[in-house]
Length: 203
Image (cartoon, rainbow, N blue to C red):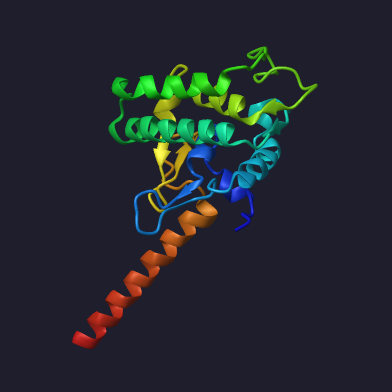
C-alpha cells in the first residue's frame, strides 16, 4: 500500500527518529506493521524527507537506489537506533550494551560513502549532489550521541513514536499535538462524558 508521507510522518524532529517511526504500533505485535516492508516506500520516504528535513540536511537532497542489501542496512540501523534511543528515553541513561549493534549498523550504512560532513551550514556536506539515504540516516543517528542530544528524546504517550523534545521547559508529551494531542483530548473528553452519564443514571 502506498504511504502518504505527510508532515505528520516527520514528527520525530530528526531524520533518524522519523525513520524509527516507520514501524507503526511497535508495542502491539498483533497490529504492528512496517512501512518499509516495500523498498519502494524507502525511496518515497527519502524523497519526502529531503523536504521535511531540509533544515537538518542543510538543503541536501536524499537518494535511495533500491536494492535488497541497502534496504536491509537501513532496517537494521533503524531497529538498532529504536532499541538504543527508546531505552535511553525510558530509563534516562544510554545502555552501553546496545551501542555495539548500533555502531556496527551505522558503520555499515556509511561503508562506501565518500562524504565531507560537519562544516558550518553544511552538516551533511555540499549540496551539489544527492546523498545516499542510508549514509544520511547514519549521520543523523550518530548525531544523537553528541552532547546531551539523546536526553531530549521522548516517547509519545499516544502512539509510542520517538521524538525530539525541543520545547523550552522540556514538557512535550506528544509527537504531534495536532494529531496525538488532539486524540488524547478527545479520548479524555469521551471518558469524562461516559463517567458523567454513568453517575447521572446511578443518582
